[in-house]
Length: 542
Ligand code: F6P
Image: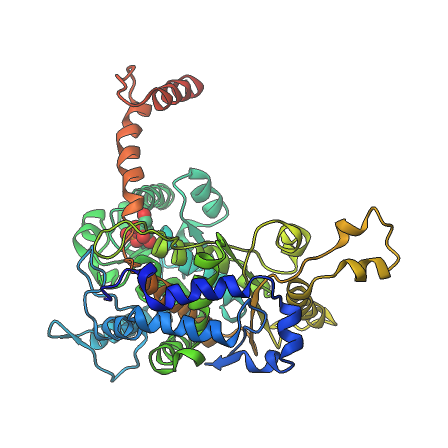
């Protein structure tokens, strides 16, 4: 890693001066000065077309951002990840989600073990299992075929599966019902199972550690639910499978490890939807289409690994994110898919980006003196347009936007798709170019209303366009954001692969839970606010 602190790097300093020089120039002017900008500032890879021309940049900005990537050792760090080096320094682990999608026959030896062979051994077992469930060959305890699959997991063991299921619903077996239970709030489990018959239901307990409170609580409730309906604990064998790295805990829970699908500690939870954590996805879309999904991931990995920075989609988008976060002070990024099937994509990205890059110290443990990960959020268009877009257009904050659109709808119906996509282009155009006072006045607007109708424009966006949402394309899209996160984490010099920040809350909850349940008034040793809240809760539930 570079020895020069980020803010002292030559490219960073040059970007600071360049940012000051750029003040006052806007996108109207930049487009007028360079009529080909909308064709030039584009890049394409793995079926994804990126128009980044409506960003607050010039060719010089790009040159300096690429220099910053070089001075930050991006290529070296990327290659270290692909080689399986332990770049997750605080957990002393390799970061090898890219190995999950290497094709059969490829080889990647880490600590003397060919991880690709391991990956494909599990993929083959998953495929055999998925085929049995999909064909009806896998029977429940009473001999009926499985019709309902309930994935129980949380964080990376839920968000990937649920996002992929929703995104690829068009490709799923409609004779099977899929539900996803994550929250320890019992409502989640109760509502997900209330209309299911136990003899046709299979639970997939997904947990990397198999020690997560929410998942184990839900898994125990699922077992009680099943056993009480089918009348015997023997039923568990045919109605529970596990996905985990921890065989011991799986066995302790009572799931036969023959029905366990493993993965490895070099797969981070939020990078695991293409590991065995994707079992529900594979059952839903079938092994062949799951392999298409993996192929899409791999295509983007190869692009990230080999394309020059100025043509590299994740590098470009990652650097643009750094530009806005660190030089414009942007606090958030909105991801707005114009594709209803991608409705859970922003929620998925929240864990991917924020658990990865929400860090306050560098790799060597020094406090950072610059902002790191932005807040990611979003909703599908056009719904968001009638809700929060007002603030993006006319509010006082700069919110860079990623629009995602497709050439073809999976459900063509009349003019719907053209109308949908016209809104992608219109929104990006309105954000960039706005409407001047003169233009508002020329429309005959009353003088007192003119200032309200002025749109300043100069609000940046990327537009990502692809032909159609397919399993392969979804893989490309997820890998794109994984590598954006990697690019930014490398520039910021942080560990994008640990998540220590979630631990303290877990420990405190474990301390507080018995104080809420004890039958006698507990002695409370917390701060006065927590103590009072606990007492109030105890009186409310009494
Ligand atoms: O609490 C955060 C976290 O550790 C995530 O990183 C992870 O995806 C999630 O919990 C679930 O963990 P597990 O798969 O081990 O149950």
